[in-house]
Image (cartoon, rainbow over all chains, first blue to last red; front, side):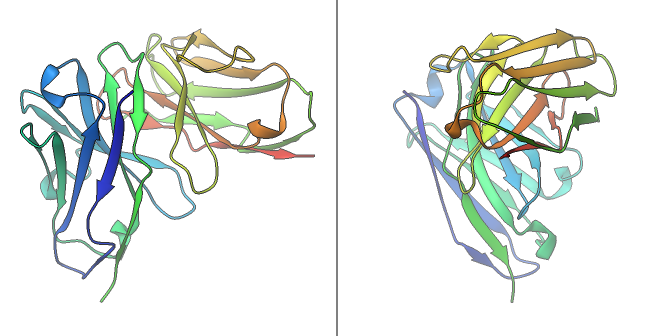
Length: 119
Length: 107
Protein backbone atom coordinates (compact mmCIF):
# COMPACT_ATOMS: atom_id res chain seq x y z
CA UNK A 1 0.00 0.00 0.00
CA UNK A 2 1.26 3.42 -0.94
CA UNK A 3 2.16 5.72 1.95
CA UNK A 4 2.93 9.42 1.72
CA UNK A 5 4.69 11.66 4.23
CA UNK A 6 4.99 15.44 4.07
CA UNK A 7 8.03 17.23 5.43
CA UNK A 8 9.17 20.83 5.61
CA UNK A 9 9.20 23.93 7.79
CA UNK A 10 6.15 24.55 9.91
CA UNK A 11 6.75 28.29 10.02
CA UNK A 12 7.42 30.56 7.05
CA UNK A 13 7.82 34.32 7.05
CA UNK A 14 5.57 36.51 4.90
CA UNK A 15 6.87 37.11 1.37
CA UNK A 16 9.11 34.05 1.55
CA UNK A 17 8.73 30.72 -0.26
CA UNK A 18 6.98 27.77 1.33
CA UNK A 19 8.73 24.50 0.46
CA UNK A 20 7.38 21.04 1.22
CA UNK A 21 8.42 17.56 0.17
CA UNK A 22 6.33 14.42 -0.03
CA UNK A 23 8.15 11.11 0.34
CA UNK A 24 6.41 8.12 -1.19
CA UNK A 25 6.84 4.57 0.06
CA UNK A 26 5.21 1.32 -0.97
CA UNK A 27 5.09 2.38 -4.59
CA UNK A 28 7.17 4.09 -7.23
CA UNK A 29 6.36 7.48 -8.68
CA UNK A 30 8.15 6.52 -11.88
CA UNK A 31 5.95 3.49 -12.52
CA UNK A 32 3.22 5.79 -13.81
CA UNK A 33 -0.54 5.55 -13.53
CA UNK A 34 -0.90 8.02 -10.68
CA UNK A 35 -1.33 11.75 -10.29
CA UNK A 36 0.72 13.18 -7.42
CA UNK A 37 -1.05 16.16 -5.89
CA UNK A 38 -0.89 18.83 -3.27
CA UNK A 39 -4.06 19.91 -1.47
CA UNK A 40 -4.46 22.35 1.39
CA UNK A 41 -7.00 23.04 4.08
CA UNK A 42 -7.23 26.37 5.82
CA UNK A 43 -7.86 26.07 9.58
CA UNK A 44 -11.42 24.97 10.17
CA UNK A 45 -12.24 25.28 6.47
CA UNK A 46 -12.70 23.18 3.39
CA UNK A 47 -10.25 21.65 0.93
CA UNK A 48 -8.43 23.43 -1.89
CA UNK A 49 -6.62 21.55 -4.64
CA UNK A 50 -3.26 23.15 -5.45
CA UNK A 51 -1.93 21.09 -8.35
CA UNK A 52 -0.53 17.80 -9.53
CA UNK A 53 2.48 16.33 -11.25
CA UNK A 54 2.62 13.18 -13.31
CA UNK A 55 5.66 10.90 -13.30
CA UNK A 56 6.60 12.28 -16.71
CA UNK A 57 6.91 15.72 -15.17
CA UNK A 58 3.77 17.19 -16.66
CA UNK A 59 1.95 19.47 -14.26
CA UNK A 60 -1.33 21.22 -13.77
CA UNK A 61 -1.86 24.02 -11.27
CA UNK A 62 -4.95 25.61 -9.85
CA UNK A 63 -5.32 28.89 -11.78
CA UNK A 64 -5.95 30.69 -8.50
CA UNK A 65 -2.40 29.85 -7.37
CA UNK A 66 -0.66 29.22 -10.67
CA UNK A 67 1.55 32.31 -10.61
CA UNK A 68 3.08 31.26 -7.28
CA UNK A 69 3.19 27.45 -7.45
CA UNK A 70 5.81 25.01 -8.65
CA UNK A 71 5.50 21.25 -8.24
CA UNK A 72 8.45 19.08 -9.13
CA UNK A 73 9.38 15.42 -8.91
CA UNK A 74 12.57 13.58 -8.01
CA UNK A 75 12.05 10.00 -9.12
CA UNK A 76 15.47 8.95 -7.83
CA UNK A 77 14.34 9.79 -4.30
CA UNK A 78 10.69 8.84 -4.92
CA UNK A 79 9.66 12.32 -3.80
CA UNK A 80 7.69 15.21 -5.15
CA UNK A 81 7.78 18.76 -3.89
CA UNK A 82 5.74 21.94 -3.60
CA UNK A 83 7.03 25.48 -3.70
CA UNK A 84 4.66 28.38 -3.06
CA UNK A 85 6.22 31.81 -3.38
CA UNK A 86 5.36 35.19 -1.89
CA UNK A 87 3.33 33.70 0.92
CA UNK A 88 0.99 35.68 3.15
CA UNK A 89 -1.04 34.81 6.23
CA UNK A 90 -3.76 33.57 3.86
CA UNK A 91 -1.47 30.67 2.95
CA UNK A 92 -1.53 29.36 6.52
CA UNK A 93 -3.04 25.89 6.19
CA UNK A 94 -2.56 22.19 6.58
CA UNK A 95 -0.88 20.96 3.42
CA UNK A 96 -1.53 17.42 2.23
CA UNK A 97 0.20 15.42 -0.46
CA UNK A 98 -1.94 12.82 -2.15
CA UNK A 99 -1.96 10.38 -5.01
CA UNK A 100 -4.81 9.18 -7.17
CA UNK A 101 -4.75 6.50 -9.82
CA UNK A 102 -5.85 7.42 -13.32
CA UNK A 103 -9.05 5.45 -12.83
CA UNK A 104 -9.65 6.94 -9.40
CA UNK A 105 -9.81 3.55 -7.74
CA UNK A 106 -6.77 4.19 -5.54
CA UNK A 107 -6.49 7.35 -3.52
CA UNK A 108 -3.90 7.91 -0.81
CA UNK A 109 -3.15 10.92 1.37
CA UNK A 110 -0.32 11.92 3.66
CA UNK A 111 -1.13 12.86 7.24
CA UNK A 112 -0.79 16.56 6.47
CA UNK A 113 1.52 19.22 7.81
CA UNK A 114 0.53 22.57 9.25
CA UNK A 115 2.36 25.53 7.76
CA UNK A 116 1.95 28.86 9.49
CA UNK A 117 2.91 32.09 7.77
CA UNK A 118 3.96 34.62 10.36
CA UNK A 119 6.83 36.95 11.11
CA UNK B 1 -14.29 26.45 -11.91
CA UNK B 2 -17.11 24.03 -11.19
CA UNK B 3 -18.85 24.85 -7.93
CA UNK B 4 -19.85 21.95 -5.68
CA UNK B 5 -22.67 22.58 -3.22
CA UNK B 6 -23.29 20.13 -0.40
CA UNK B 7 -26.36 19.94 1.78
CA UNK B 8 -26.92 19.99 4.58
CA UNK B 9 -23.81 21.66 5.96
CA UNK B 10 -24.36 19.76 9.19
CA UNK B 11 -26.75 17.21 10.59
CA UNK B 12 -27.42 15.44 13.86
CA UNK B 13 -28.24 11.78 13.78
CA UNK B 14 -28.43 8.79 16.07
CA UNK B 15 -26.58 5.51 15.91
CA UNK B 16 -28.44 3.24 13.54
CA UNK B 17 -29.95 6.06 11.49
CA UNK B 18 -29.86 6.13 7.71
CA UNK B 19 -28.13 9.31 6.58
CA UNK B 20 -28.14 10.92 3.14
CA UNK B 21 -25.90 13.78 2.03
CA UNK B 22 -26.37 15.53 -1.28
CA UNK B 23 -23.89 17.24 -3.58
CA UNK B 24 -24.79 19.38 -6.58
CA UNK B 25 -22.41 20.48 -9.31
CA UNK B 26 -22.76 23.83 -11.06
CA UNK B 27 -22.48 22.03 -14.40
CA UNK B 28 -22.55 18.44 -15.56
CA UNK B 29 -19.64 16.29 -14.44
CA UNK B 30 -20.80 12.88 -15.71
CA UNK B 31 -19.86 10.48 -12.91
CA UNK B 32 -16.47 12.02 -12.05
CA UNK B 33 -17.31 12.45 -8.40
CA UNK B 34 -15.59 11.24 -5.25
CA UNK B 35 -16.65 11.23 -1.61
CA UNK B 36 -14.28 11.64 1.32
CA UNK B 37 -14.59 11.21 5.07
CA UNK B 38 -12.49 13.37 7.38
CA UNK B 39 -12.16 13.01 11.13
CA UNK B 40 -10.71 15.80 13.31
CA UNK B 41 -6.97 16.13 12.93
CA UNK B 42 -6.80 13.47 10.22
CA UNK B 43 -6.40 13.47 6.47
CA UNK B 44 -9.45 12.88 4.31
CA UNK B 45 -10.09 9.27 3.44
CA UNK B 46 -11.53 8.31 0.08
CA UNK B 47 -14.78 6.38 0.33
CA UNK B 48 -16.23 6.40 -3.18
CA UNK B 49 -15.01 7.19 -6.68
CA UNK B 50 -16.84 7.41 -9.99
CA UNK B 51 -19.95 8.45 -8.07
CA UNK B 52 -20.89 4.96 -6.94
CA UNK B 53 -17.81 2.72 -6.75
CA UNK B 54 -16.58 1.82 -3.31
CA UNK B 55 -12.88 2.16 -2.60
CA UNK B 56 -11.21 -1.04 -1.52
CA UNK B 57 -11.71 -1.73 2.17
CA UNK B 58 -14.60 0.70 2.62
CA UNK B 59 -17.61 -0.97 4.27
CA UNK B 60 -20.71 -1.51 2.20
CA UNK B 61 -22.84 0.63 4.51
CA UNK B 62 -21.54 3.52 2.39
CA UNK B 63 -23.09 3.96 -1.02
CA UNK B 64 -23.09 6.66 -3.64
CA UNK B 65 -25.34 7.48 -6.54
CA UNK B 66 -25.97 10.11 -9.16
CA UNK B 67 -24.74 11.40 -12.45
CA UNK B 68 -24.61 14.73 -14.21
CA UNK B 69 -25.15 17.38 -11.57
CA UNK B 70 -26.85 15.66 -8.61
CA UNK B 71 -25.23 13.11 -6.33
CA UNK B 72 -25.88 11.48 -2.98
CA UNK B 73 -23.86 9.68 -0.33
CA UNK B 74 -25.83 7.36 1.92
CA UNK B 75 -24.75 5.71 5.14
CA UNK B 76 -27.20 2.89 5.70
CA UNK B 77 -26.80 2.50 9.47
CA UNK B 78 -24.76 5.15 11.23
CA UNK B 79 -22.16 3.86 13.66
CA UNK B 80 -20.08 5.78 16.21
CA UNK B 81 -17.01 5.69 13.94
CA UNK B 82 -18.97 7.39 11.15
CA UNK B 83 -19.30 10.71 12.94
CA UNK B 84 -17.09 12.93 10.81
CA UNK B 85 -17.15 15.54 8.06
CA UNK B 86 -17.88 14.37 4.53
CA UNK B 87 -16.75 16.08 1.35
CA UNK B 88 -17.61 15.56 -2.30
CA UNK B 89 -15.10 16.35 -5.04
CA UNK B 90 -15.54 16.64 -8.77
CA UNK B 91 -12.69 15.60 -11.02
CA UNK B 92 -14.37 15.97 -14.37
CA UNK B 93 -12.50 19.15 -15.16
CA UNK B 94 -9.56 21.02 -13.75
CA UNK B 95 -9.15 22.32 -11.20
CA UNK B 96 -10.79 19.59 -9.14
CA UNK B 97 -13.10 21.24 -6.63
CA UNK B 98 -14.58 20.17 -3.32
CA UNK B 99 -17.91 20.76 -1.71
CA UNK B 100 -18.01 22.74 1.52
CA UNK B 101 -18.47 19.65 3.65
CA UNK B 102 -21.21 18.07 5.75
CA UNK B 103 -20.52 17.56 9.42
CA UNK B 104 -22.32 14.54 10.84
CA UNK B 105 -22.77 14.87 14.58
CA UNK B 106 -24.23 12.70 17.31
CA UNK B 107 -27.80 13.50 18.32
